[in-house]
Length: 269
Ligand SMILES: Nc1ncnc2c1ncn2[C@@H]1O[C@H](COP(=O)(O)OP(=O)(O)OP(=O)(O)O)[C@@H](O)[C@H]1O
Image 1 (spheres, rainbow, N blue to C red):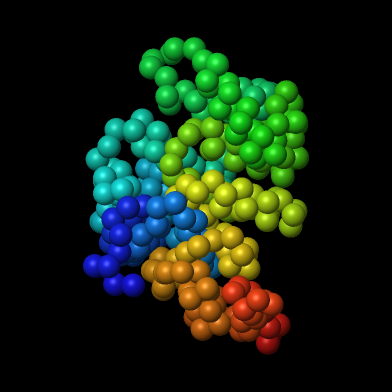
Image 2: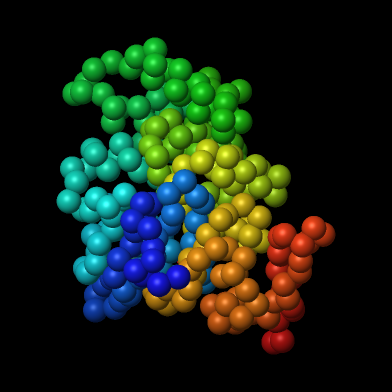
């Protein structure tokens, strides 16, 4: 798809470049994550996925280029406005919440996500609580509400962090390797939940078959550059996997002829 044909709705990266100590971590990346759809961000370790996501949730300012949501430059908006539009489930969130949470209950931690909708220090409302309960249930974490976050297993924490992102009530979600620590069933369940929301989502994910199963679009990064983007089955191909990861794969078409998966060859070492 050419740049001119791309829709302006959704989350748009335009010529995004990030440099650090004279090295380009992300280089002139341009693509749109379409509104209301799930986009997989894939690429080898160190290819710039987290860094690119950080430019959208304003942790890393691009040295060049813009990141916009529905046409609005996210770096021109007040931080609070961005938090009302974009929720993040970051890779390091478990550690951050663990150290900052200091034994707080799951309910309190998820409730904190509602504070961006408050004026000053106004107290939580019944509507906040209802949203939190709903989000915990959506993330299949309702039964954990009274537990201390720090005592949960890695997978249980991921459910709670998903609930926290949902409770923020934003139209856009950024998820950085959200399936870490999860068993295969909940990896699938988590992406199914995200897909079911109908919100705009960008998910950095390593499992290409999960991306093929649950994502609509994909963007492939390699050494900070965008190799390809577009509908997932057209992007996660044998050729692209070889180019990005140096791994030989065979595309399998599932019964029904609609969906594809990848089978990977053993490495010749
Ligand atoms: N704070 C930082 N300071 C210096 N270099 C950094 C910093 N954060 C990331 N990098 C470098 O930027 C490059 C891209 O890292 P990034 O974490 O964005 O990759 P990634 O694709 O998310 O990797 P992974 O799949 O391993 O999580 C890497 O070479 C990394 O070492």
